[in-house]
Length: 49
Image (cartoon, rainbow, N blue to C red):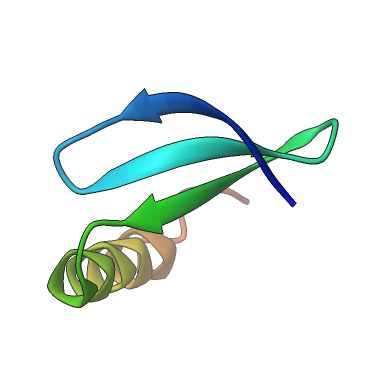
């Protein structure tokens, strides 16, 4: 169940999700696709060993 609103940004809102997690709800699909692509690029940099 989505809990309290924690913050609103340019591309999404973040809510409590249970006791120890959060859920990010994007304002529109293009924002989510853009963030997914950025996450893929960062992951491919292999910065964490």
